Length: 44
Image 1 (tube, one colour):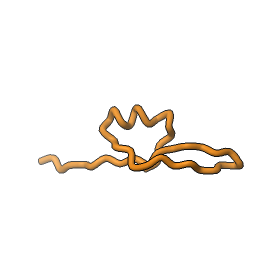
Image 2 (image 1 turned 120 degrees about the vertical axis):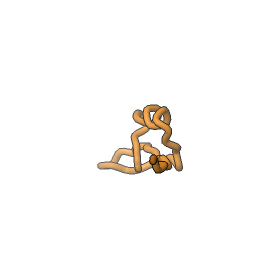
Image 3 (image 1 turned 90 degrees about the horizontal axis):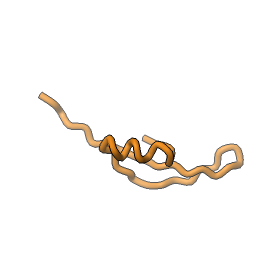
Image 4 (image 1 turned 60 degrees about the vertical axis):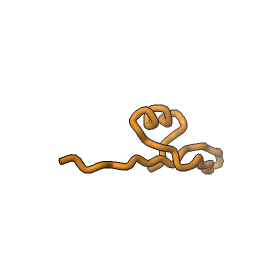
């Protein structure tokens, strides 16, 4: 899943880990975001 650098602290506090930082061009502007993931466990 991708997240903005602004949302990164929120997701990290929820247990997500950052895989990599990415720089993307959107309508001529360079933007940085992060690829994140979280391992889910079975309950029950």
